[in-house]
Image 1: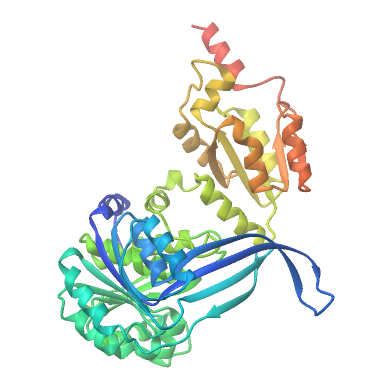
Image 2 (image 1 turned 90 degrees about the vertical axis):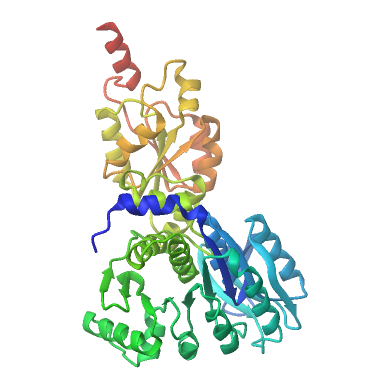
Length: 474
């Protein structure tokens, strides 16, 4: 598949023009976070000392969150109960400017999935749900008809909880819009002749009764699903990436775009949302599938039901910025790394003019663990430390130069006064510093069991001495 990155980046820039109706099974995800240090004396189960609780839209609502996070206009239709879960859910959706006028209250409770996370491992999940007959079928159909002129693509997120019915699918097809479906295997006949369907490999196996996953079998799965549905098929295959089967006969296999996979929760919602948004602004299926593949790689590097943002997708296509992360992105990555028992090494500094002292420090730091994080002083932070006229090299350029070093895994920008908070959030196993370290930083790291490692500088070599020599030579 020969599609240039420049074209994909231009497509992302147009995402704000897209208008999507998401319709399906709406849910609320709750995460109970805690620490496990002992086993209960009452039963052989861990005791979780709860430290935090968070909520996130799930199911079709997570697909809607991904649409909005990619910069598109989103309308959401589905069913909720008359309960507090509905109130939390609508508050979260409205905060992302998602239109919730299509959410209709019925007699059943709002679907909730509650996950307990202890020491960054999911220990148990509780599902609050009652499969239902959709008593609001007519209201949902009327809503879709009323707003059809305001949307480009309809995204059907079917978790087989009762919202999507054969009648709803039939009526949606009459509206003349592209329809993209995240399906359930036992309802495949509902989706005939839509624009595209995105099954995962398990669902594809159930639909076709093909159990093997070699390339020949994958191709046969795709061909059978094309024949059964009369729709284009984007098959998500986990660590093996994706396969696109087009009605015109083209088959494209896309390798996975991720270094570390931590949590697949909500990945399907991310894929189908990206496919819908890209299709809405005129991207062809190959382009939309490629962008969905990149988005999936970003999502599985995060823990929990977390949408992918437009800036993250843009960065993932830009090779020079893939290592540069916002603090939010970094915290999510660190949680995933710790879940896999990876050793985290942290260092920070200005790195205004890269020299051999820097590269040796970074090499020795990387040797201490699995992942090296560099916190890079922002331009304003460098000015506060070094004075006017510094930095010589702006922060984005410094980050791009440092990204080329294999020793560094991730880079984030920070203000100098944030260092203690940043260390407390990341909780690295090792803090690596030159001789300019402070006792406060050392104390913070040691407070949660980390270790501070001091690397001796090379005969006073620094960016400042290099700059001063250059000034003297002028």
